Amino acid sequence: MDREAVGTADLGRLHVEVGQHGRSAVFTPSGELDHHTAELLSGPLTAALDAGTSRLVVDCSNLVFCDSTGLNVLLAARLRAEQMDGGVHLAGMQPTVARVFEITGADAVFTVHDTLDQALQE
Image 1 (cartoon, rainbow, N blue to C red):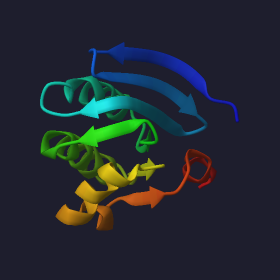
Image 2 (cartoon, rainbow, N blue to C red):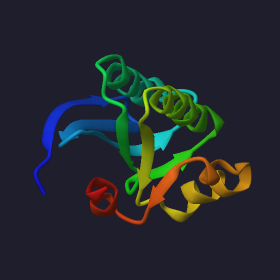
Image 3 (cartoon, one colour):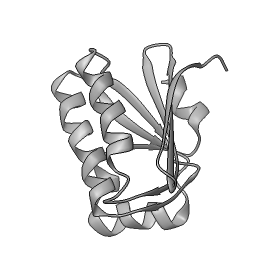
Image 4 (tube, helix red, strand yellow):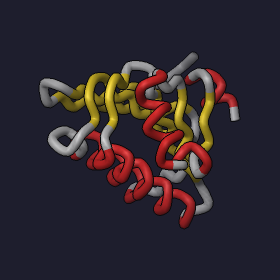
């Protein structure tokens, strides 16, 4: 799979890689997405949307924790992307992260894929 890496951000507990794959911006957060680290993902998501990219793919396979602040970052990106006729696709969620989405009902408003490859094929 050809993915062009365009940047990274790191704040100890969270590392975010940003890339491009076709018309999708791809974000790979690794670690803990919470109140203290959410800006590391929020910033690049906002930048992609500001640049006109409306199809955002978040590879959650290395995300080990997500609190309500992290969930709100993803929900805000989803709202903006949908206003641009796009969307946020989540891929490879670990059980502990998936549980947060199930409990809150957020899994019903995102397009969720088992793997990153599946998310990039659409």
